[in-house]
Length: 316
Image (cartoon, rainbow, N blue to C red; front, side, top):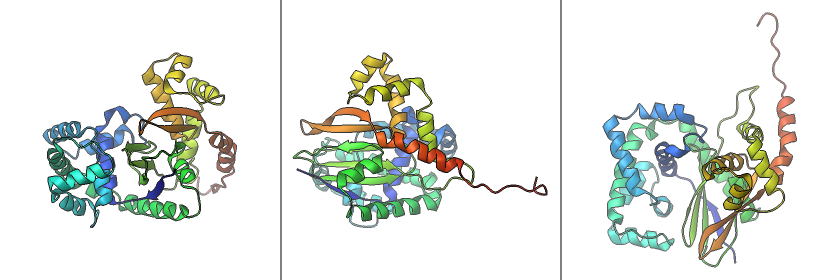
């Protein structure tokens, strides 16, 4: 049994990602855009608008727009998608949700209307103003990765793009969609349905300034600079472990271990094994991703051997 992997991108995917990233407070400390970006975006909206949007996001909860974006037949700009989305009947909304195995809520039309309203406001005040190079870069990334799918095993491409996520086949899973994203980097997020999985993977789009380390090198060295994270890697080098087993061995709180695993995953230092259980990917184990550890000397060496221009006395 196997599943099909494809890469998809449309501007509206990134619009949804940026909105979710902004309103997901618990991840603000983990995203590389940081709290500075959050404050800058906050200043673009009136407080009453932010409060209303926050309530709408809570209402949407686990409702995913990815299946609808994927199925949209026309232009998938924010406006193009929403014009199509708003025109769907209740029956059409139900059919698209059910086709991928998404649990269909009873208030589906209400959720659609709320999602559409806040996305239009988000696009007007923030997303339409972002650097155009972000969307251009994500489009190029999607085309590049899709072309490699013809030459490399799908599971290997998925693991590489996500920095260590490994999906094991099961009879219900038919389709996996990889979506490049920028706003919530270095996080990788997925929407799991019975027959489909949508995974938003992190992309570094802009080259680092001369003399500065790459984002991937920074993530790797930062992840390895903490005693607790090194202890976790020590454990995972010996066997696969569940989250509960790691918490038990390290003897720290679940929230603390969760924080450290985010850093290790962002650096690509762990493999996250997703096993099917009752037709859902709820059985997860972790192991060491040795190729990331082995790449450290190469990345350090490449950076330290960087041939920076030397200032002359007249430039000093």
